[in-house]
Image 1 (cartoon, rainbow, N blue to C red):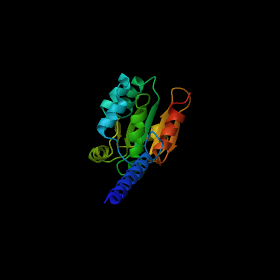
Image 2 (image 1 turned 90 degrees about the vertical axis):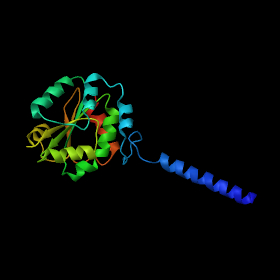
Image 3 (image 1 turned 180 degrees about the vertical axis):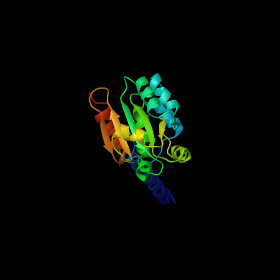
Image 4 (image 1 turned 180 degrees about the horizontal axis):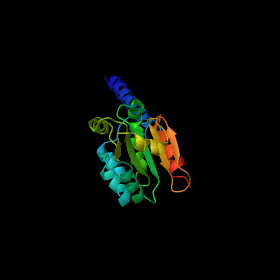
Length: 197
């Protein structure tokens, strides 16, 4: 009986150790892996706590679909002077946009106290579809509705979706076409192209 209890105890300890190792190896935004789990609203709020006012105003509109097009976006960029900006162009019908949404959720929460993140919903025929997308793939920043696609084209010089524009404080903007395959790649590009200099 004692030998059996000892064996069961050792087996339990071994299972706990294996689970702990497995959890440690799960990818996350901070370790640079390809995050697959979404952040909760509480986790996002905790990461973005004490953001400067201009960035906190973006976070307060997280998941919102804003009107106003180029005029409203340029006015917002004026308020964000002094911060690097990352603009992600997406559409609700774009499968790669859906696939990269977790990376944007993690990285925007990780860098959101230093970098302004903004979305452009480009060429979605109906606001309802775009709003459903934002509800399913929540992020901590708003998107501007661009039904015609003209604003997205103006910003990224591309009809491609997704496309991401990095606007650093110093130096030239950088445009990347295509899906971000991982949180690590997006995080690396935020550091390289938005936070450079």
